[in-house]
Amino acid sequence: AQSVTQLDSQVPVFEEAPVELRCNYSSSVSVYLFWYVQYPNQGLQLLLKYLSGSTLVKGINGFEAEFNKSQTSFHLRKPSVHISDTAEYFCALVENTGGFKTIFGAGTRLFVKA
Amino acid sequence: DVKVTQSSRYLVKRTGEKVFLECVQDMDHENMFWYRQDPGLGLRLIYFSYDVKMKEKGDIPEGYSVSREKKERFSLILESASTNQTSMYLCASSPASRAAEAFFGQGTRLTVV
Image (cartoon, rainbow over all chains, first blue to last red; front, top):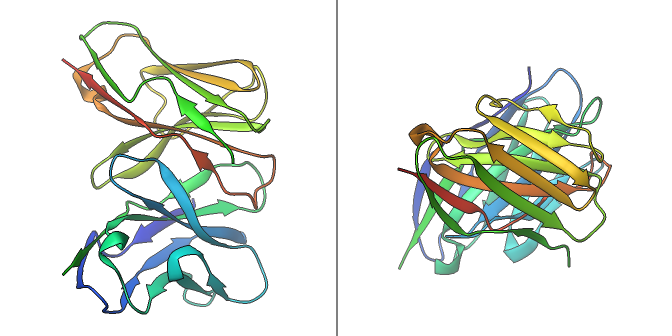
């Protein structure tokens, strides 16, 4: 069965430092991969997605992610974080065959400190 | 912009009550989903629907049912609310493409006392 594992439940980081949020997935078929962000008391919104082609994907707010098929990973990075990036981040996949279910990871809470 | 609207942001209900959570989307999306979100567990799929009157069980359907009589509306029903159903409930919709992202409502924080 497909699954998504986010390796860190919480990541504290100082403002203007780089950050990487790690995501590994498992699936027997090819997948589409997504990162969503959830600000406090809000729903989720899309940061970026990987469908095919270039393995480096750029998203909103200066975030990017790299798809690594051999390591089944899709890590999210930002070279310099801001206080406003404090939020919960979810990695997710949709298998490109069969149904339309999105499988989410457990989330990583990013704390940006001044 | 796609709008997914959940009828309540906060709800407090008593054990044993029948609870209705409503979700409406305005972008003619085929797919609609109900998730519950709990700390450390991420989002778990309760039910989803890919067409009017169609529904599929997700990973945790026990204690819930759904209704989709119109394309834009997807209702989650707690037949007899219990305290372990206290959670954040998120509705989402997406078009009929696996490459498309899901659009989420603001969430309903349900407390069962």
